[in-house]
Image 1 (cartoon, protein in one colour):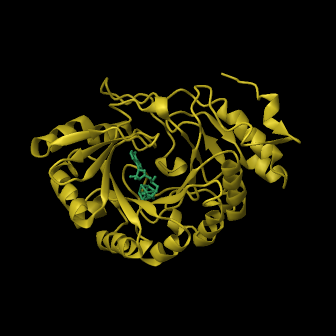
Image 2 (cartoon, protein in one colour):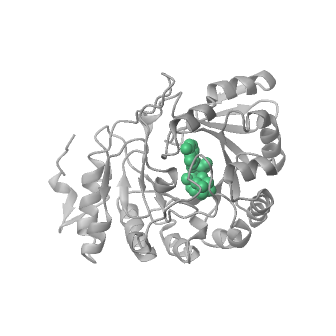
Image 3 (cartoon, protein in one colour):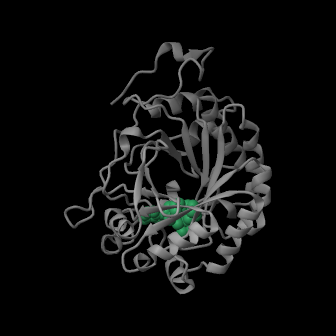
Length: 350
Ligand code: SAM
Ligand code: SF4
């Protein structure tokens, strides 16, 4: 659906955030931006990348200066939370310079600057992240078994990640562990993961494996472990208290009465969460995806590169938001993968 831009949204040719914050056609305010700063990664997780990935030529990627302009434009339009992701964001050259630049928005527009990482570089960067105003991070970790970890990530090594997580904690970062629920892989470790996170003081969120990438539908379907099932198993050992808390995102939370731990569930396939979606995603090439599970997207690189002035960029963002779809169409229910996205998760950053 095409919604015309309101004339009052323009002041001297520039959009004004206060006059017209980003609201999509379904009355959802867009306040959360996730930016993939690279498609490269030092791991090759089986559900995310092929082992021999063809990465983009460098010229395709937004430079750090372009990423700065783009993120700053979104902050000017009312985005309050910025998550840096990838690929592996912490392998991009001089990424700490970018975090430092973004930190200037904290307290003046931006409430939170955060990152999703595989943890491999945290031992190097945790202290600097804190210096840049980062307070909470997400670390993806599916298993505490070194062999399984190597099998899932292909190139990753568990001790390096555990050391990174420990360094993050020493630096004062709050860590949330994100674990993809994988049938036949980490289903036997459910209680070990819960116990470890409880002992270490990390929050824990489980994610259903999504039909992303061209890795073969059967792989994804075979590995699909519905979180309804995981939750049932948890409930056999713990009393689960549903929390009303919503982050505007896909996660639903419970508290384990016995330990006080908060556990999140990201269930794109068993629970539709789109009605409260407050987010959009930008890829490392400057494509704005209005929904993770749809192909609708807008090119922001062209307006960025066409002019040093941000007017065209802002107009392109506003126009794209008028096209944000109502929701995604992922569906495994007929024992096939429907609504599948051929692009890899590393492209949009999850
Ligand atoms: N490299 C960083 C990391 O692993 O945290 C950031 C990018 S990664 C693409 C972001 C998240 O997407 C990770 O938590 C990863 O587990 C998740 N992910 C990747 N492929 C997925 C898939 N097919 N289904 C569900 N989650 C996936
Ligand atoms: Fe890399 Fe993250 Fe994808 Fe794993 S999930 S291959 S760590 S981008």
